[in-house]
Length: 142
Image (cartoon, rainbow, N blue to C red; front, side, top):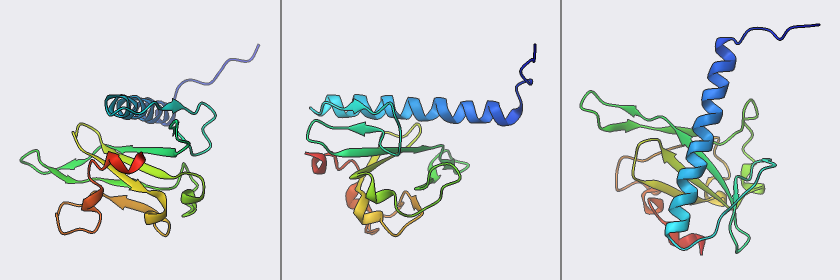
């Protein structure tokens, strides 16, 4: 009988990422329900995490933010690729991305076509950013 290898740091790290991703999906699903949407979880995840009743496909992205010494959100960057696949063509499979800096009360709801030539997205700190209009912009999902 062959025994399984012991759990390594890489496996523990991977499991933490899976748990964080699932927690983010549940958090965003609850936000959608509160706002009158009826999201369905896609269990065969090929880039689509949630599907709304109106057919819109959503990819959830979450990350732990970097914080300043005063505890304020300093920076939070999300990869638009999946795993080792850092392609910029995720917009072909989903209609929207919803970004959440873990622990934040704000969400960034952005059409995938707006980000079609990007490999990552950084939450803007300035109101003058062209992406600031997507902060908590749940209405566009209707």
